Image 1 (cartoon, helix red, strand yellow):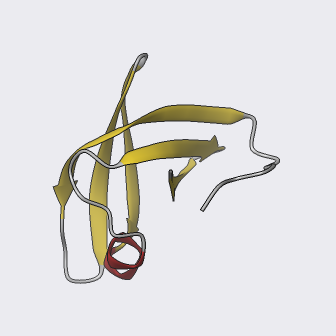
Image 2 (cartoon, rainbow, N blue to C red):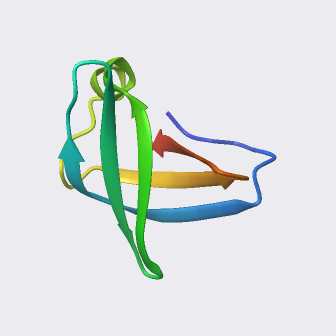
Length: 71
């Protein structure tokens, strides 16, 4: 998968540092050159993206929402 274009301006490339799994939602900490960015996404999305500690991702920040794209 590769992202060709996206309208979100605030993008932070990094690696998953920690995953705190919950039954419905999980907390994903992404280590970037500018610090840690934390996202709360569904646990189903964690599984669908096959996210594990060390996965290369892009944290997409829009307003108060932080989405995750796996690289």
